[in-house]
Image 1 (cartoon, rainbow, N blue to C red):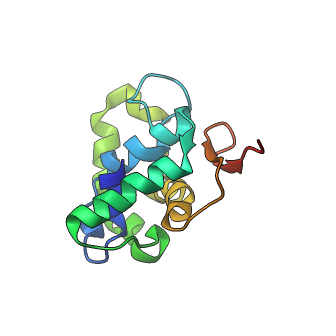
Image 2 (cartoon, rainbow, N blue to C red):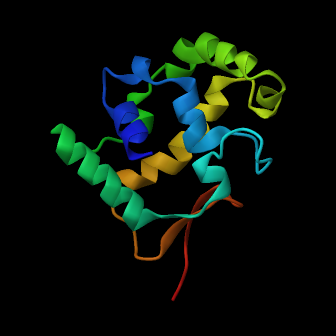
Amino acid sequence: MAQYLHAGAQAGHVGDIRGGDLHDVGAGAAGDGQLGHPLTRNWPVDHGIAREALLATAAFRGTTLAVLSCAVDNLADLRQQAYAAYRANLGTAGEDLPANFSEVVEAVIAFADVLASEASAGTTWSPQQRRWTRKDL
C-alpha cells in the first residue's frame, strides 16, 4: 500500500499508476469478498503505522511525502480507458466496481491525503464510515 500511495503522489509518475493498484487500496466493491480485498473498504488502518510505512518508503526512494490530491491532476481522465478495460477483464466480478475511475481516485485521495501529515494518536481509518476517525482513549 505504501508503495502505491507514494508512487501516486510523486509528480511525473501518475501516468504509471494502474487502475488495479488503486482498486487494491480503496475502491473495490464494498465488503462483497469477491474481488480482491480493497484495504480501505474492509480493514481499519492505524494512521501512525500507515504514515510510518509511507515515510520509510519515501526515505528509501530518496523523496519526501507529497499530498496525493495535489499530484494526480487529470489522472482520472488519463486512465479511464485503461481502468474500463481492467474492469471489463474482471468479468462479472468487475460489475460491482465504480464505472468511473474518478470515483476510485477520489476514494484513495480521501484515505491518502491525511497520511501526508501527522495526526493525533488513535487516529484510525474507519472502513464503515470511509473516513479517518479518532478514538478517544
